[in-house]
Length: 437
Image 1 (cartoon, rainbow, N blue to C red):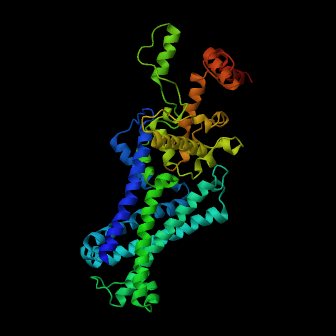
Image 2: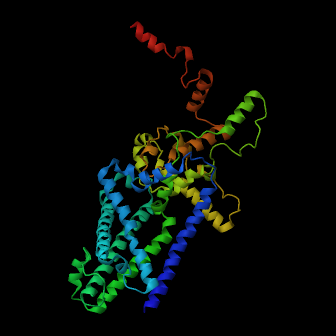
Image 3: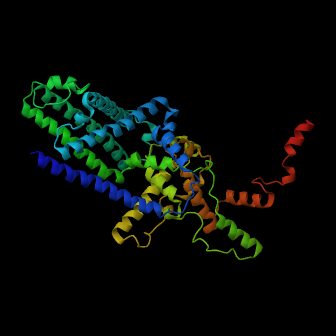
């Protein structure tokens, strides 16, 4: 029944990868509709950012034990899926374990590396579940995270755990069949991990072992394809977008507010009474998600909701409503509103009702001190501050509203050239007073 297995396998393969590619393409359309944004980086800088922050995960190693476990988990997950290439080759050639003929005596070493990583990833998933469900690490049980977020995280952890279990089950049953003489392989060296399990399975009859081998094979493949179809709807899309996002890290100081030449032109025209020239923007700042730079929308879809930004936020630590993680989650939710709206009504349909302010309150963005601690802390270089500043800009410039504290600061800057309410001639008064003491 090789042909039936192969037909069903390729149907599942194309369904899973097709669903993943289609959804990512739709998300990319939403991202590309954001405002233009200049990264100011070279190709060399992008490659360096990808290697340092995306692949080597430099920021994760602020906490070495967590960093080591995380990089082993990520590397293990992707390297283990080299097995998927062999499975596809197996289906195409109808040859059992075709890599053995390419790698020869090195094939057991190849399997050994995959199995060691599979064990590491499986235990890591259990450890992460333990931290979430038993230890209840504060940033992972923060009120920001609703039941859907917790369910999503736990589902992915359980799914990846079983991905590893299925691949180990497949290898163990396969090697047990080899010991029974059911398969003729080019290798004779036992699999490093599963050969020990196979010794306990050797007493089973061939039919049971064939069933377990197929259970592991199909379980791993179907779960992998189901995950591929689900990931674009999950926060775990960061498993792919984080590499893109880190490569596209802008070359600009953390916390810098975006320069808007059109704002300068309008202000100069107002002060001088001349025509600003050129086409004026529809609005200043961000009222809705598509008013944001495209990079901010990419940030939102990259966020994994780890909460390191919120844990580092001084405003949040003092009880303010602001949570940088929630800023990213709500921005993504609003972007998904656009995506659902366009799926139903066509990509040329007008925007859906509402705005980003229906998701993020003025109280939240006004609590931000612009210290950029959230930007510094994010492992994949997400910038919640850019969203906050653009929303503030909209409130002040488009709606003409500002808090009392802001108004006083604006007046002082205009009159005194500084945020403080005393003239420039008195700025060094404190120093002169020190000299007289």
